[in-house]
Image (cartoon, rainbow, N blue to C red; front, side, top):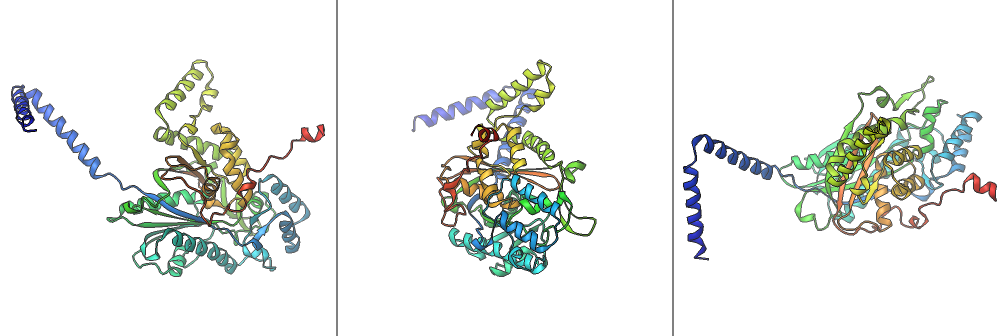
Length: 467
């Protein structure tokens, strides 16, 4: 050790002597470059963001007496006396093609016997889901309401006063300096957007803390009683669902966390008229309020997805896959086939082991699978979630995550992609890395039914004819 010290000192002295011998026009740029490199390294070290972890999450499983099947829907439609026979036949057709099963959950007013949507029923629907999942989550995550420094609550179609965030803060007696956000109108993307919002808010704080993200949808006041077919679709596919997620940047909680957030990405496509009007809350000619889903919705979702993955791909895909993608595009262009070149997409299965794909409807799942080249196994969780719970809007991706855990598929180090679309039109991605093997929690909504999934496809018409 002592013999190496003089040698090092001698080498340093020789280096300094050689630097002094350099001409000034060479020495100055060299020193400036070295200082610039040092400043860049220091800035990156000082600006390094604190890691954010998904400590845990919960999904709401309503009481069994809130389950709704085709028979219940038909009974409600008959007793409310708001729909003609033609409209009833149309909704029956939509329901049969929707991909929903016979065990989804409907809002309380469907079972009230009054057949009227009221503010009281909307508040009841909100409170049942919000209070249940927040209570479950805080209990199993060993976090008190006083620990929460950021609260993000998202619901697209119901924005009461006081806000939903205030309702939660009041119920759980949260501290007065909690940063509360109530987000409305974001559609099915609100779950992933909520994670992004909570993460940014945590990283703006001087000290690490906890952020509670609660996402729900409220269909009570937006149940449609008119005859506009674009607005009747939501009656057939939207169902009750709520999820809560607890994210933290407290380093000591890494050992308890399930996932680490790798990155988020949000893209907005509202400048395009078709995208902006693809899903809209509106009144029909008779003043009936509801949400209209246009025929352009699936095409808009596909176009938005293509632009979204163009931005996401270079950030998550391996370099080898990006090179393969570039080669396929170049080969198609060289062959004069511009349409084939435009249809090429990278293989995102090389970037992720698990994908929570937006499961807003059977047509949307089919469109995403076709555009991305996904096989049945990749979209299995999306189809299963749609079948078991229906379109629960912003909470969909968490019900899908619970499906992976119920199937015990998540292993430490696995990468997971949450992708959701929202009105406006927007797309949002959350990319996670599993910190440990994840099985089902005691409150996993798939407990007791996951063994029935995936649901076997119905027999084809050719099979019937052969039989």
